[in-house]
Image (cartoon, rainbow, N blue to C red; front, side, top):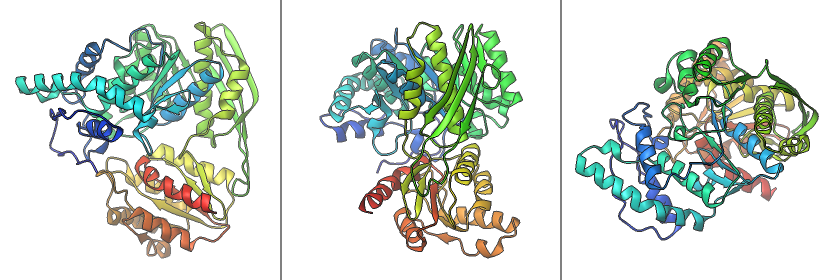
Length: 489
């Protein structure tokens, strides 16, 4: 397991990378040997830690692989990954070779770099890291010579560079880049996109991005580029004004959900008993084009995913306005084909087992809405782990009213997990405020997630619902276990 980063660190430290990379394990080790804020208990966000000039220097030494590459750049508090995947699915259905850079990954680092829905191969990753390594080593040496460790690239910067290198090597027609954190200082923000997309603005990473929606919107809107169209998902008035002002300052057209395009979602019912598709209607007045899509089959579950899909369709219409050949049939196919792991993913029947990566208040609220809308089970059990820099109290407050049994745990492969005892204390406090004192006293604490899952599974009746959620990291650690058990049954 990679070592955690000293929380007192405020800038990347140049790390030795002289060992030659020959296989996937060494390639992954080389990347994980960098400063990796995804695995740090403390996530900084400032010019000293996240330096776009460092990223530009890295790309320059690699020959600027991003130059001339048509890019869709996607930021937002929630829905970035799903919206990026919807956009890519529609483009692929339209016949375009499409690359997607996403983060974090669930099980293997290869998931971050995909072309036409397929992750990069292990041998391909090794070859790219072999090309990258001497350049990084040179930058590390220069950092050491100048005694300025902030010149040394981070894990996320290297994965961003690898994605661009891979997309150029595969000669993709378009690339979709998902922002990692924020926007303004994110390593993906060196790109010159054809379209900029902002999915949503809500409270998350407040220590890094700000304590108001306006401050968070300012950071997200940092990806806006002069003259590049901006497409936005549903926004409340405060962040909408911020983004609109920044778009106007940059001379950008801004297309908004609810004003320039809209959707209607019809959810499937009774999903504890059978699989089903929802339906999506879309209507947009995007520039000179009025576009409509009625009754499109929709595999992903939830109104929040329908909003993500509508934003992806609006992006596709904008790309069509720019000259891309994207038919209504391709849009329908793209929506019907897409299924993403750990997004209200059903991984068991009798009892129904749902896995979701919801990790902030807004995404947890969306998850609860889906469970209430599409599942009708006799009893609901929650298996929860959470992350230190999140609004854990807010997350628990959203979840607490909706479950009859609660087991709290903590993921093991990342130091950012909230200790089980602390999470249980928060849950008990919220339940007592809801006057559910009896349930508050029966919360089960089990720090080991696999043991926690076994406890939940042993207690569940066939007509129960089990929901596993709270973080990408708990989803990553348990998904394979849940899938193998589901396959066995």
